[in-house]
Image (cartoon, rainbow, N blue to C red; front, side, top):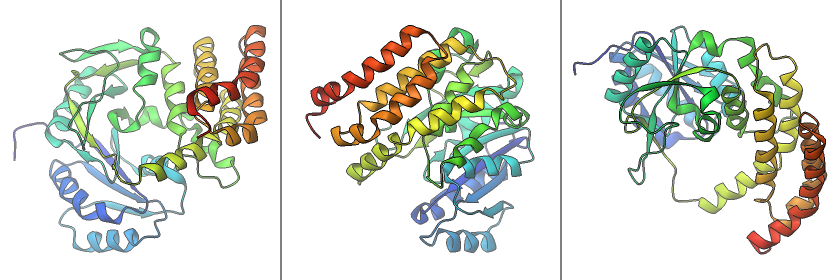
Length: 328
């Protein structure tokens, strides 16, 4: 066993939906994490490809303890939230089953995070296919602690649940449990929830402990095959953004924390309309009033100028689509 910190205070939550080919490989990593006393929680999000049976088989043969829970399909956010609810350790680290942890750096980062006394820790990740590093909020060759109020755009741009360690009691606060609002979308599977989580996280003043820029705690898998299929799926998700935006704005009234409202609504307004330009011409026309309605809901939290801008975007967006996408 290598000489680095134990993970006895860490819950590792792994979500799985229809990724049977990754069940065997991930268990090699989970075994090593369990040997460092991490709590392992596997959430099967209603898989239909045989993953469920494969996971049950692994459970029966496993040489280490772990919790396996099968739930009706809730989407990634719902599965992850359920796993957080089942966890019992002080710190939470989340992975999807096709991503792999860098165990040595994760263990060392976990120890440093505990020493920092913060509620949130951010580290880097590596793209599995290229070996390239991602990016951290504040480039640094050593660990630092910063406040989100000084780097709101940077924290938001570093979007990814997987690169963070969180204190469990922070995640369980009522104001941080708003993903339930997206379950009101008439059974639609919405997977761009990380946009709204990072908006929420970035808009509140938090101390974040960040590792050095080269500390990679997991490998992010983005397969090169099926690229066109993934893109089409992403475009379908964008058509759900207006509805999700309206639900999110409504949920903010019940939040107990203090957001930087001006930054939050300005950024949300930009996110909404930037994504609209990714839609093909017909898809935009079909959803134009939805984007306008969501934009209006956001702009009324800002100023009259933003309401006029919202109308201008509605008028100009088809032209922008034609310019950048040439009738895709």
